[in-house]
Image 1 (cartoon, rainbow over the protein chains, first blue to last red):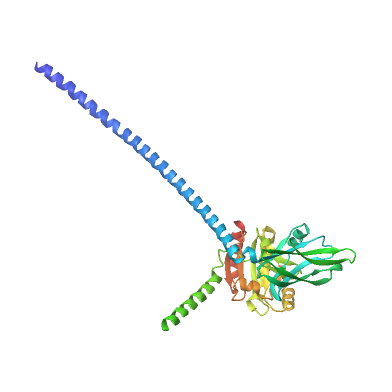
Image 2 (cartoon, each protein chain N blue to C red):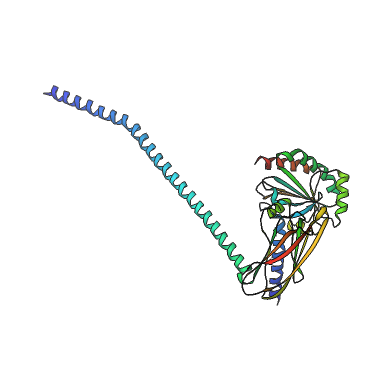
Length: 197
Length: 166
C-alpha cells in the first residue's frame, strides 16, 4: 500500500516537474512573440502618425497657398479697383525699322513707368506678345499720356520718338495699347496709341 | 504730452529699425528683379538669369577696394562661366564714361551695368561699397558681403562652388 502511495507521489512529482519545465521553456518564446507584435503595432501606429502629420502639413501648405492667392487678389482689388483702373500695353508689329530699347510713360506730366526691354523681351513682342507696362488708378476725367520710345531706328541710328494722346477716363476700366508698327512707304517706324473697346 | 512724444519716438525708432533690418533681411528672399543698360549696349534683366548662380557686384570708380576686387571677380567669372555662373557688375557712378574707362583699364570681361539713377542700389539697400550679392539658381539671395578685404575671394569661391553644386 505504502509502495503504491510512493509510486503515485513519484508520478505526480514527475508530471508536476515536467509541466513546470515545459512552462519555463514556453515563457521566453511567448514573451518575444508578444514583444514583436507590440513593436509592430507601435511601428504601424507611428507610421500612421507620420502619414497623418504629413497630410496635415500638406493641407496646411495648400491653405497657405490659397490664402496667399486670396490676399494677392484682395490687394490688387484694393489697390487697383476695377472702376478706376487704367492699364497700358506695348505691342509690336513687324519691327524692321525699329529696335525697341525702352519706353517711358508720363501721365499728366508725371513719369509713371520707365521700362528697359531686353533682347528676349523684344523677341517676345515681335512674336506677337503684348506687355503690360503699367497699371494705374486714375480718377474720371481727361488725362494726357506721353509715351517716349527709344531704340535703334532705320540704319541702326539712335532713335527717340514720342507719342501723345489725350483720353477720357469714364466710369469703367480703361485699356490703352501703344503699338509700334512699320510704315513701309516712309521706311520709318510708327507709334500709335489705341484704346481697347 | 510727454507720453505722446515718447510714443512718437518709439514709432520712429521702430520704423528706423525695420528699415535697417530690411537690408540684412534680403538673405533668403527672392532677389529683387531689375533691368539695366550694359556696357555692351544691350539691356540685361536679372530674372533672365534664373537657373544660373548669379553674383551681383555693386561698385564705383571712386572705391579703392572695388578696383582691387574686380580683377579677382573676373577670374572667378572666367573659370565658372561655362558651368552656370554669371556675374553682373552694377556701377553706381553718375557718369558711365568713367566706369567704362576703369573697365577697359582693368580689362574685366564680365557684363557691367549702369545704375546712374541708383534705383537698383536702393532696391538692394546698398549702403557700403563694394557690395556683393550671391543669388542661387532659384533666384533667392543667399549671401551678402559688404565691403572687400583681401581673402574675401576665398569665401566667394566656396560659396559659388556650393551654390553651383545645388
